[in-house]
Image 1: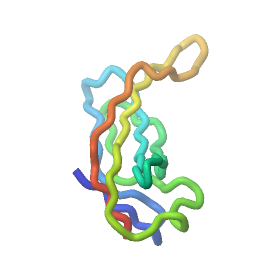
Image 2: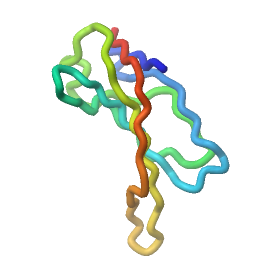
Image 3: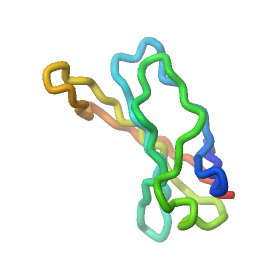
Image 4: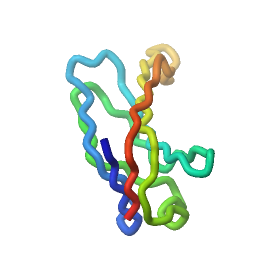
Length: 104
């Protein structure tokens, strides 16, 4: 699994499809591991069941802070359920998928 980061365009390109039979919304985070530190370089908005995502905008200043190269990283999938009473999302579960992050 790989994710290409386009610094000039300010986004991370990938494809994610949230199944139509999913019971929770989700938010994706792209995390880059470098020098024993982890950096969240991009985060999606809420993805509802049946929706897909092709790119995520980089967090502010990430395009200028990232150096060209290939890095180890993770795509973190945070599953959320909307609490109808408070109208807030609560994280019910998350999981990480190892990815190769290619910064161009």
